[in-house]
Length: 279
Image (cartoon, rainbow, N blue to C red):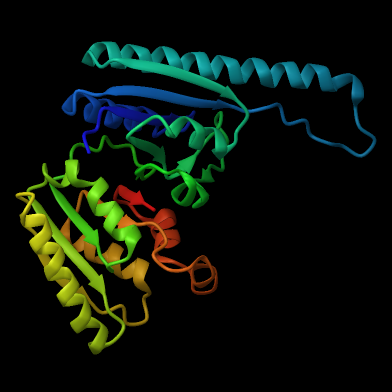
């Protein structure tokens, strides 16, 4: 799948500039088009005991002005950075902070880049990107950690593999990135010796498949012990010094994920490495 259309979610967080530069670099490498999307929040009026009805219009207009000024500043900075790198771009501002707006816009792109933590207009407490996105987006999702760092094309990649259709979709969608990588490790987390033997067969099948695309990988089976799958994958990726983790979002039933706590949820909350997710 060629990457020709990229969508990046822009906000007022400190990591926004680095995320936008990451998206611009990817668009430059793949000779693609970049769209910046900013969600403008509706005013939030504090409620006091007896209320101050006369102050509501003032508070509302003040928040609206602040939000619009933030949107304009983000747009101007986005457009300038794109022009400097000669990347074709568009800008979209939508009223209302709702992940469904991101999903609607994502339908017409090849990959979507979002922050790990989402900040509307400078709140102290950022909102974590909901895992609802990874399930319903319908497009590959790159989640960038809230670090002040530009993420370039990955050189070292970890693929979390369990033969699920979500994992297979993630590997297929990530091929444009895998073809640029210098080292790739396929890891499976086995809960038993029997499962480990089965996963090694699956891993080898994936290795052969990727070799047909000119991509060489090494395979490794991991023991989760008492850490859980998500933490085991993350620790292995950190040890490998990976630049990207490729994985299927929710490779088990949703009920199992709710009861057991899923690897996807863990990595969305704790990963310091960009995640490439497909469902």
